[in-house]
Length: 482
Image (cartoon, rainbow, N blue to C red):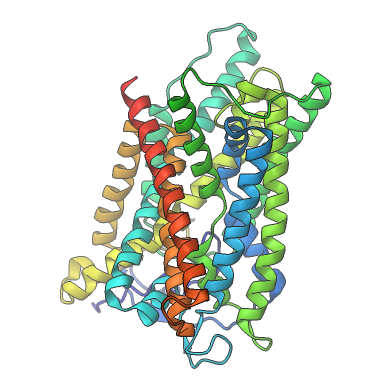
């Protein structure tokens, strides 16, 4: 009975890029439950500009796109589009800085490859900054699991409401809670969390891409159809009015936070770049892919947000698809919501697996002789693939899923939670660390022109981040105790 090294880092990706750990199939002659050993191998870098574009778009266009119409409604027809363009420009800048950190000390010819965000921070800024960066990444991953639980429950409830309206008429009192759907989603994730190599399955990228484009395109199409049917463009320059100027300020803050959540992909830049072949240099290819991806994403976001706001005006819902429950073709709306659910079932695992890997690696290092932590068993059942079981994985991952489900049940506030997650991802991970690493890598002198420009840019984004965080927390508190 050998110990198993179950804790090789899983790449931090929002899609199915191959993991560096692969589980060999058990022999047919083995017993139904025996220990096994992982075989590690480094995947060959065969990616190009277009595979990187596919990975970025699949990773960026997710459930956050459904909140953009609501954000546009709070900001109005001028500041809404300008805010999206601003975050697109910030994402450009952040990504270009990060691309130069993949190789060190030279961005194109350096001998050291930083295969993850935290590895780049550690190499350029030291262990202390790397520890802070890793903590923020794990918080972001955990928070995304909470947000996905909330979003899935909203979509499942929308399907039930749609079926209720179809059966009993549009005037029927079809109101349902979220709790039962969150518990159901949690139960599914408890099972799926026991699959150790789920993150490395190639089909995950394909499914995620199809599902995300499907429901986003349906939302865009329904919004455009409603605008054409209304023969009018709803909305105003100032956006949705509020009873007080302070309330309007908080709503603007939450709207900007939702946009901040939807754009950056700084956590996965270096992992995607690590899949690219060279020559040309990985940095050059990744920058080209980022330009193409951000342009496509921005066009898509402006279209979804704009058509959604034009369709509903001041009544724009927090989740765009829920606005069509009584006005659109019910089968199409149900299909779109089902696509969201399928996407987020897999997306939850994609975001959770890196956190699982970090915690389990630490436990294995602290307790190297513990069979509870380090031993895997292969469970062979009739008619199903062999399943690798680990007692520590079973306990920890079940508790983890239960905790995200509990937090989602306590704070089931879609737009506000996205705003908080946006602040974790925006300034610390998309601005501060990339700027500091670039300044260190280029050896920029303090108080030189470049130093002042980049530090000033970082300070401005920090103030914006603080504004978003305050508004999102206020929104959660107000919703919780209203």
